[in-house]
Image (cartoon, rainbow, N blue to C red):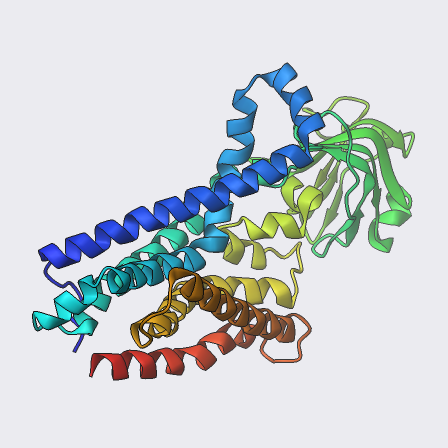
Length: 384
């Protein structure tokens, strides 16, 4: 039986300290390499940003990306740190001395398993609380960081109102659509024409007495929009007109929609940085149809900590059962193992995304169904 909260002895503190040092060094090395490559690849853009916003723009840009980088590499970092600890103790004969003192090898591995599980939990906290707070920065790249130029976007269909939201481009900094052209369904087209167009449309979040949607400024079509009454579908306001809406000016219209600006402007990239709670809420939004890939993503969030732990459990025997190999051997084998994990996970997710596996959410659990029993057998044999 594996104790859930083992008592920390001198050996445990030594192993955990060595694990933490290795983890921090590996993370600093990998993240530093990522920053250098990305910085020199976008050097011209960053020189302009530094001249305009100051040197702190680098921290604002790369700070959130370091969190996202940790999310993507946490499992590999935990495995590499654990393998380094075991390999180091083997090369310095510390492991031999520990075993000669009557301490079994599994007692050496136990603090590494606990540390690896803590890394998985930290990565989950990072995904759920830290990264979502910076998704606005993460959805912008070096070219669109300032947000001064309109960028193209993929039209989004509002399934609740049956309106196609499109336009010339978006300005993420001001949450504005440039030259919007909202294509109306037949139920509204008979009174309002085929489309609503204007100079710009600004997203307005829902309030207590007003729905969320887009405030159209400088309406060009229909030309007599101010004289037409507001339109409703199923008793819910869809198009608010200044004819009977006092807070609208003569050249304005308000299109009520549950499609947020971030969903409109960033699409799939935006979903990656949602927390699980926000993703569940978005899946319940009647105006959006995320499809199977979003459901796979949701369940993959739930499975990820367990998969990270399975990777560590399966990877540790690469060095605990083989003496005389160096850290480069351990690192190479760990890399191959991670590639295998990624290949199986990506293949399983693809089966769900294309509805080859039904329900699609089952595809997110397939890697755990494959690697979970393997990890259990490895852990059981090693502990016995």
